Amino acid sequence: MDDHRYFRIRFNTIRPEKVTTFPIFIRVDHQMILYLREGSQISDVKIESLDQKDNGNSYFIMEQDRNKYRQ
Image (tube, rainbow, N blue to C red; front, side, top):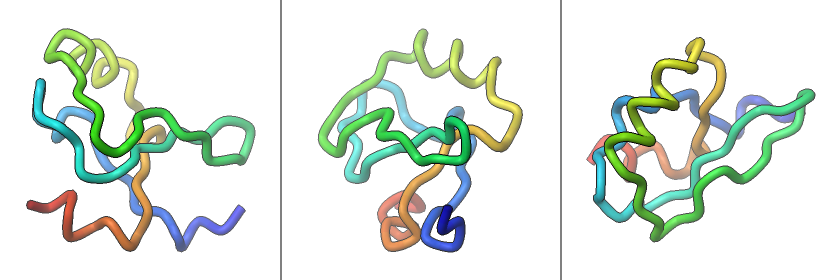
């Protein structure tokens, strides 16, 4: 897997009900799998649930989307 192409994020930094401007990936068996498409929304309840399960190594965005994420 090409880890340097991805930037690790904490799911609790995603704003509830806000449309995402980048896709979010999860790592499954050393592969990046699309979890949330760009332009999607996620509820605060779902964010809280996912954040409780997040060990800090679960959610990623593409390195090229880092600036979008920070905004």
